[in-house]
Length: 259
Image 1 (cartoon, helix red, strand yellow):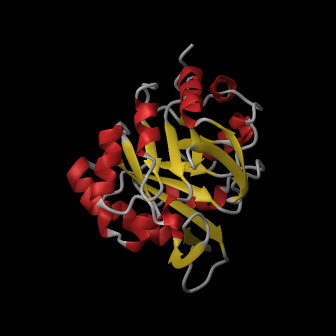
Image 2 (cartoon, one colour; image 1 turned 90 degrees about the horizontal axis):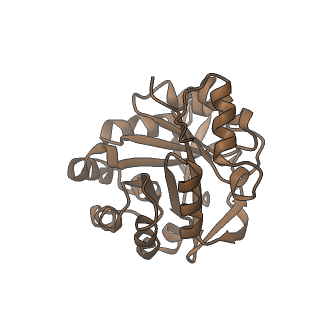
Image 3 (cartoon, helix red, strand yellow; image 1 turned 45 degrees about the horizontal axis):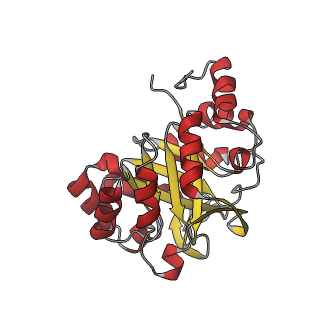
């Protein structure tokens, strides 16, 4: 059995790490490079960086931040936000990231997933998906709709259908974020996470809602997620990566212990 992963997520805007609730009311919480090094030393398995306004503002990714992070940490990290072309992906990978996360750009041009998988290997391509609970309908039989541009634009796409299509196109992993749970610290959205993780054959990272160690245990077991993204619960000093892993280990969940 593969170890479950804990992955801190750093949302970046204007070169600074920021955090909000349901993509709103964001506050500045620090320098992303310093935070990355802190999490690396704490025992994080991977990191994810999202430039949260790049797509909405139609600008390129934060390559300077990527380069500085790559010089300071020695664990895999993914970068997303504003990636819409093969050239965008190449630039991020050359700057030092191990993975690229495509979200809004992939919805607009799904072919970019296949292009990236062919050029760099599917292990490098992460589908970032923001899902909004809308209720079951003919258009959204799963009950969840894909939204893009940081939650600003609804697409009409069914979340489960899009996850399956992205896998078929060559995505090697899915980072599934619940808009409804994002930043609330009340627990992951287990329903959509379980639905996607049991319907695709690639790893699924659960995102949105983590507030205490029990939330991670629930999503990694009850919802069969392969990894759990954390942000608020560790950014603001509530828990350390070590504490989270200790709790999971005590519950019999396999995690990588570096101490």
